[in-house]
Picture (spheres, rainbow, N blue to C red):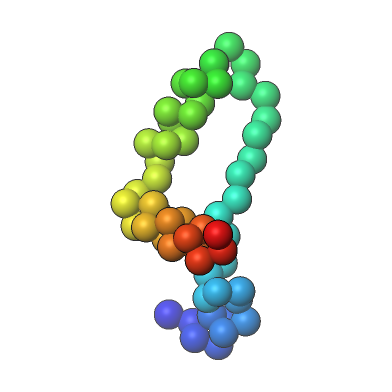
Length: 56
């Protein structure tokens, strides 16, 4: 939509894969992991697989 901005971004994307960990209250680590895993789309999985596959 904004090609002049896209050229300035690393990899053409505003956000890069990253992580954040904060306090969880009464939730277990497993509950949080399941929630995070459920947020990934198949396209994101393919993108991450390609990203890490090239560097290993």
